[in-house]
Amino acid sequence: MTRLILVRHGRTVLNAEDRLRGLADPELDDVGVAQAQSAAELIVRAAPSAVWTSPLDRAVRTGHIVATVCGVEQHSDARLNDRDYGRWTGVLRSEVIERFGQIDSAPGVEPRADVLARSWPAVEDAARSSDDGPVVLVSHDAVLRPILEAIAGTAIPEPIAPGSCHIIAVDGGRWSIEAFDWGSPSGH
Image 1 (spheres, helix red, strand yellow):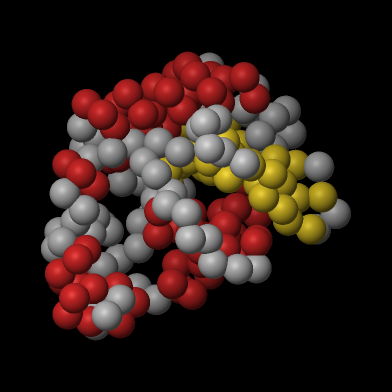
Image 2: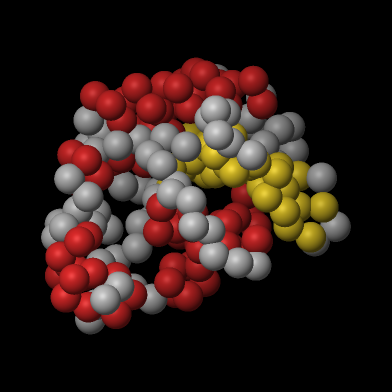
């Protein structure tokens, strides 16, 4: 069995304001740095073999904190990049939903199916590269949610909080979610 640890990057100012981040590149705020540190302190117990991140700064910085605490190499993979919200990047989520009913209906937003088609091969490659311990993938809600939902076969209503960790596994080609929101008091 091969395990991967999915991590959502720590909080940014745009997260705090509930604005669509997409390909914008805000840095972690102080809360986000603390969330990344907490994730790293949890992940180090799993003895990961590597950290892969989206190339956006918030994921790279979160990944750097995890990789440093765990003493492993960090790699960037564009397939883990956030969803492209086009002209809606930086706009309040509530405004886009009010106008279009849902984010997916806003014109110019990268389709969820395209996000999954782009990111899933990175998941498979990470699983194949995991020889000495789980690979940590640091990405974004809009990437992690479709991955987790594809494995679960259903929508995941719970939020994927900044700095949260989730364990997935593959055994004989069959994927499963071993822990959603691993390490949180309500995690299961």
